[in-house]
Amino acid sequence: MNAGSGVVTKKTAVLGFGNPVRADDGVGIYVVEQLNNQLGPSEHISIFDMGTSAFEVLFKLKGHDRIILVDAAINTNEPVGTLFQLPASEVEAQIEDDPLVFLHSLKWNQALSYAKKMLGRDYPEDIQVYLVAIENTRFNVGMGADARNAADKLVSILLKELKTIE
Image (cartoon, rainbow, N blue to C red; front, side):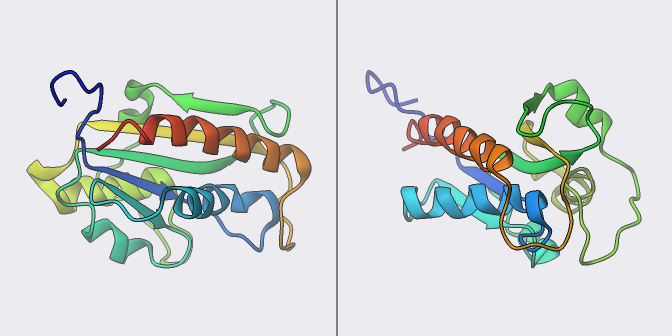
């Protein structure tokens, strides 16, 4: 933290997961697109679309102090658009020793599992996961209103937090 400025220098990676042609499942991709558009370039904030090149991105996490993940969550029994932030203990419990994945369907917990192995001692301790409850994952470009409203709320939350990073 810089003396007296209230600004924190903590290199942060924001990873958006999802598939933008599967309706509400594109929420994570939408969030990172909005953050990219509103924040612009920064040497302390990296924003990654995990929907298309997930494994390439995992190698780029080295040197980050914090990871923020954004994804959709289906079958939560909560209304569409409900926003969740997982506690650190739950995030850690989702990391697997050797997850089986398909290259085009990497989920956030699998990405963390691989990142932890790939980065070793450089794996950041500060991990935050935000999930948005969804129902519709049918082939459709664009999200429903409830998912988009939750995504916009999350963009506001993250912008406020990320703007404190120098």
